[in-house]
Amino acid sequence: MLAIEKFLDTCPHISADTKYWFVRTESGIYFEGFVENGVFGLHYPNVTLKDLQFETTDLKKVEAFYEKVKARHPDSKRPGLIASQLVRLMAMKAGDFVIIPSHNSYTLAIGMITSEKVEETQIKFRRRDGGIGKTTIKTRQVQWIKQVPRWQISPKLDRSISAHIAITDISEQSEWIDTLLWDFYKKGDEYNFVLRVNTPDRIRAVELYGTLNNVLQILSIAEDEVGIEMDLEGTTTSINLNSPGFVRLTAGTVGIGVLGIIMNAMVGGNLEIDGVKKTMIFKTNSTVGREVATVLDAVSDFLDREAVRKKFSDLQVSQPETIKQMVEGKTLLPKIPTAEKK
Image (cartoon, rainbow, N blue to C red):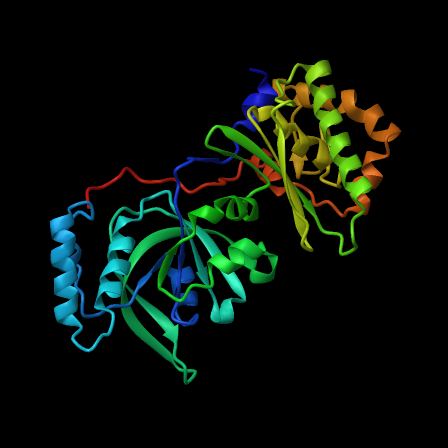
């Protein structure tokens, strides 16, 4: 494997069986407290931590828990729903992803669960009368990765988070969540690269597919001239052209990530082999730096001849942030502690 391929393989790796959850925040009143404390959870004060000391795979104990919750909530019309939501909170795994909404769901916080046990956390919250209150909530620890405005998410994901129950499994929309977090990542056995398209104008089909064809040609040049392994025949695309939108390319090899390096050079990423700017520097005395220089030299004539830079500029394609962060050595995924027994 080439050094540039080893570098690209430091992208976020997500297991194919990772679960994704949407957890409500009582109309947003717990949102700030959850974000500030690095937690999320449920407010059911009539249930104690001791009540939650059982394995969710033990059906007899789950059934007994349902009966206990029913007894503790005699006025509730749906005590079974309370119990089921708490069981879901317990069953979540470290490494799963969670989304919580702010007031009116204007903003969504996305993070990765980092604990294996339910705990209790006292958080501050803004009361409906405007004052500040405190309460204790059954929580799981989470490292928040990103906040996004709701208008940026896909219509499919938007529909999935419209359910009114406290915790919803939204794993079917994982591909849309992944693209909100990163523009280059590995999911299961496949690598994904995301072109973020920001133009507010309608895009002509010939323009879009011509640009995609240029992208595949860039990958082909990198494969032929530099020896980076590609999966051109197996590369697939997913397109979501809301404004902003994206084009996601999925392939079986890490080489597709070379697009991020090239685009950082094209889209103002200050990719330099020798220079004083600190945003995208590979040292020339490193193997990966020399290979990056070779890649850029190999595709330079093609980019000029086909006016690829202008095409990307017209589509207002964003600089790939994930590659930039990888070069800067930033941590893109939280570290999961050794699993503890619940």
